[in-house]
Image (cartoon, rainbow, N blue to C red):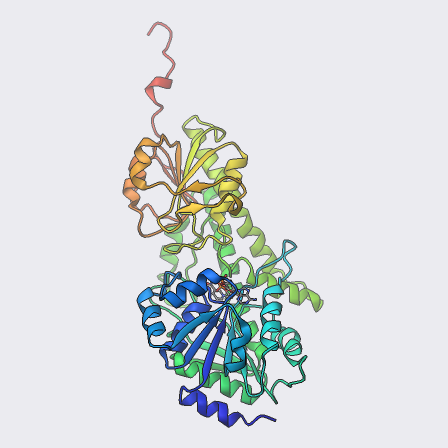
Length: 460
Ligand SMILES: NC(=O)c1ccc[n+]([C@@H]2O[C@H](COP(=O)([O-])OP(=O)(O)OC[C@H]3O[C@@H](n4cnc5c(N)ncnc54)[C@H](O)[C@@H]3O)[C@@H](O)[C@H]2O)c1
C-alpha cells in the first residue's frame, strides 16, 4: 500500500508535478490554473498544433490570454507534449478529453478509453488520476479503474482515483476555472483528500462529495436541469407565438419574482459540447438499468424541433413580403452556439442553415468569431466565409436571421440594412415593422409592398 502522506506533502508544498490530458476548452484553462498555483504542469494532447502553440506561449482558447501562457511557459511552469511517456514523471493527471455521442445517441467512450490506456502504460505507485470529462454515473469505477488496474496496481491502494466534473462556461466574463466551486468525489476517503489538496491549491472552493458516482451525477443533474428548462421555455415560446403573446416580455416580468423562479430564454435550439449531449449520457445509463427517463427525452424532442420552428418563422416572414424561401438570400448573423465565443460544435445555426439550404435558400453568414465554415461542418456541404457587416448593404439580402446574439454586432445597423429580419434571441431591442421575433406576435405594421410589384388598377 502506498503511503499517501508523501503525495499530500508534495501537493501542499507545490512540489508535485501535475499533468492534464486533453488541452481544449476545459483542459487548457485547468493546466494554466495548476501552473499558476505553483505546480510544474505538463499538458498532453494528440493535436500537435495545440502543443506547438502552448510551447510558443500562444493560447488558442479565447478565455485564456496568450500573455498568461507565455509567462508560465517562460517561467518553466507550463509545457506541453504529444507523448504520454512524461506520465511516468507526473504525480497527478487530470483527464479532460471529449465525450461526444454516437449517431445512435449512445455515449462515445473512445476518447476516455484511449487516454486512460495511454496513461495506464506509465502509471506508477502513488499517482493521483482524476477524470474530468462529463460522463454517465459509474464511468470512473466501471471503465477507468479496470483499465488502470490492468498492470497490477490497485486503485485506492497503490494509486488514487477521483472524478471531478468541469463546470467551465466559455465566454463567461465573471466565472472562470478558479472561481467556480469544484465538486470532487474520491474512490476512497484518501483519494478524495488528495484530489481536494490538488484543487485546493488552484481553485477557490472545493466541494467534496462521497464518491465519483455522486460527482458524475452532479454534473449530469446540472446539465439536465438546463436542457429541461430550456426545453420548457422553448415550448412556452412556441405557445406564445400561437397565442400572440411576447414570450420575452413574459420571462422578463416573471424573473422579477425574488424566489422560486429562474429565467431561461428561448432560442434556435441547443448547442455546444455539453447541454445537447450530456443528458443523453444519463438517459443511456438509466435505460441500461431499466429506468425510462421522460423529462430528458421530452426536452430533447422540443429543443431539437427549434431549428424547424425558426425556418417556419423565416418562411412566414418572407411570405408576408410575397417571397418564397426557395431562391431567397438569407444571411445568418452568428453561427457559434452561443454569444461571444468561437465554438460551433452542435450549434443550432448549422441545423437551421442546413434546413434553409435544403429548401432552396441562398445562404451567407456573418460571425466575428468564426471566419470560415468548412464544407464538412454543416449539412449544406460547401465552404462559407464570414462576410463583414460593412458589406451587407451590397449583398441584396432578402432576410437576415439572428441566431447568435454576439455583443459585437450593431443590431440597429443590421436591422437597417436588411429588408426583413427574424430575431431568434431578442437581440434587437428597438421595434421595427420588418423585424420578427421568435416567440412574439408578428409585427403590428406590415411592410409596404414594393411599388414595382403593385399591379396597376384598370383605367389607372
Ligand atoms: N466546453 C465546455 O464548455 C465544457 C464544459 C464543461 C465540461 N466539458 C466537458 O469536458 C470534456 C472536454 O471538453 P472540451 O470542450 O474541453 O473538449 P475539446 O474538444 O475542446 O478538447 C479536448 C481535447 O482533447 C484532446 N484529445 C482527444 N483525445 C485525446 C487523447 N486520447 N489523448 C490526449 N488528448 C486527447 C483533443 O485533441 C482536444 O484538444 C468533455 O467531456 C466535455 O463534455 C466541456
